[in-house]
Amino acid sequence: KPPMYVKIKSNKPVGNVRMLEPDHSNLTPCDCDPFSQQPCDSDSNCLNRNCQGDFIIEYVGEVIDESEYKHRIDNKHNEKDQNFYFLTIDKDRMIDAGPKGNFARFMNHSCQPNCETQKWTVNGDTRVGLFAIDDIPANSELTFNYNLQCVGPDKKPCMCGAPNCSGYIGSKATKLVEDDKKKLRTDLTKSGKKWKNRRGGGLSAWKMGVEECFLCGKSGDLIDCCNKTCPKSYHLECVDLKKPPKERWICPWHCCDVCEKRTSQRCSVCTSAFCPAHSDGNLHLDSNQSLVCNKHSKVRKESERDDRVTFTDRKLS
Image (cartoon, rainbow, N blue to C red; front, side, top):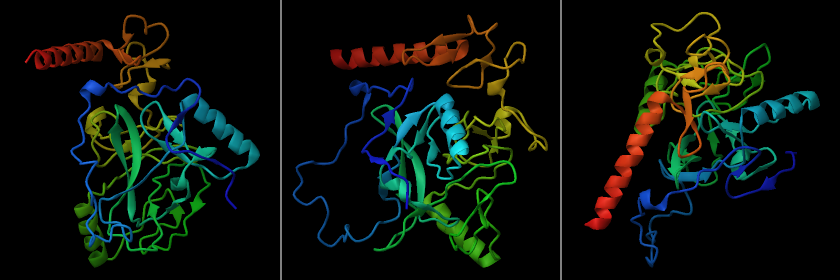
């Protein structure tokens, strides 16, 4: 029997987490006709199956920061609770669908899933949705790859039954025979599935992530930061590495740019970070109340100025 939870329709911030307020002047209007008599054709069978690329459901829950995440993980360890519903949405926030969520929290893991997570910007804020990567017939179980990260000897057994099942959630899927491997890669390429080669650590518990490099925002072969609270991944070239590190690797976000001591404040856009002694004058609050370094503070001011000029010209014309 699953633990009790409160059903919600959208993410709910907890503690100091802020939900972004949309600037409606910068939003792109939808081209759909809300007054259409038949938005779905009578032959589409839209209620009885999901086509490849279809939106299934949003993954919602309480939006928490890293400190709250660590607090909840400690409580789960103390209570020996093995049910985790954490999903990283960006560098500062993650979703906990444990106490509050929707039906997405019940979707099981599979090493060969029929759904995937995608990040979308909705009204200026990042949201996570689940989309079909195959045509899904009626009465099929909906699954997605949790992409769980873990360290230590404890591993959660995987019982998905897929031909490439790794045996443990968080471990790499086993190699398929060549014909099956080619077919799977072809199918996933057509559906836009992202392949990922991860090294490094993660968490003593479990969390799900969205597979993108923190710096460039693209998918590919990524390495994980081994800091237990850090959800970020990177391309080797983005952090000036020629090959994957053999030892425990900590990303630049945790070392002061000046003295290399432990950081207390970081740029929300890049890996620039500073200790308490060097944060003054090197980090600033932008218009969204996010910390940015000197470089990105100038970039954002120029971008905002360009947006204002463009919007003013449009109004005058």
